[in-house]
Amino acid sequence: MRITTENMQKVLYELFRKYKFSQEKAILLANVFTESTLDGVSSHGINRVPLFIEYVEKGIINIDAEAEKVASFGNIERWDGNLGSGIVNATRCTNRAIELAKQNGMGMVALRNTNHWMRGGTYGKQAANANCISILFTNTKPNMPPWGGKDSRIGNNPFVVSIPRKKGHVILDMAISQFSFGKINDYKLKGEKLPYNGGWDDNNELSNDPEKILLKERGLPIGYWKGSALSMVLDMLATLLSGGNSTAEISSKEIETAISQVYICIYPEVFKDNGLQEKLIDEIIDFTQDVETINPGEKIYYPGEQSKQKRAKNLKESILVNESIWKNIVKLSET
Image (cartoon, rainbow, N blue to C red):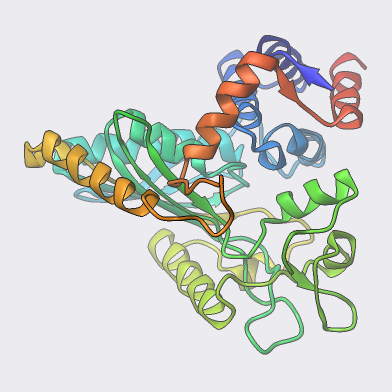
């Protein structure tokens, strides 16, 4: 079914107010969940709302908590999320990293004890809108086996890079698993197989069946052993810089919480050559896209370009959402 942007924001705002979020936080949460869905990322937008509410009900997410600075070293800071909403904490820490970057050319905020930030690209876009380059990443619960292992010991640790651009920001937002688990669940909801193998089944065989992969959450690392190593390094950096929990410690909890994240922003305007920067980015995109495609009629996209197109389509036609999920959200907001 299709829902207008305004209706989605209204229903979500009422839902979050019902669960006692402040007006400011309810507006932010409703906006972020709607914007992600509008950009075609339902897996980390509207589809996550029921689980988000479940975590609020269980006390995993502290609705009144605010992230706070606990240490400062010039343009590098450590913050504690106090187990508040991941969206609220991520928005605040991105803003702080932007402030530090505009003061010093570069800024970093390392955050501990926070919750799932939902769509990481949200904060890459936030930085790009402020004319900052960003490098952002988070650790997670273990949901991938290290290469050669049977059981999950590493996280799919989402990684984001954004670059501001007048013709459309470049925003890379990727999990270190071949498919994020939100995306795998999307395929499950649609009753479809993954286009490529995405994890292991109970027989330790690679599979493209979302139900079999989700049974034990054993995702396939991107690049096989290379993705396995990259996951470990991102976990190390997030943990060391924030002084927070590693994937190993997060695994001791029944539900993923108290995770660690890093927000790095760079302010390229310090170089006073913005015209050159736009020219160089366009040069790279034009050269990459000027290639004969294997399948005639297909197009090569730069990171973030397809989300831009999906957003335009959804603004025109309203947002396509899973009917059962939407009805569940409406019910939650009314009961």
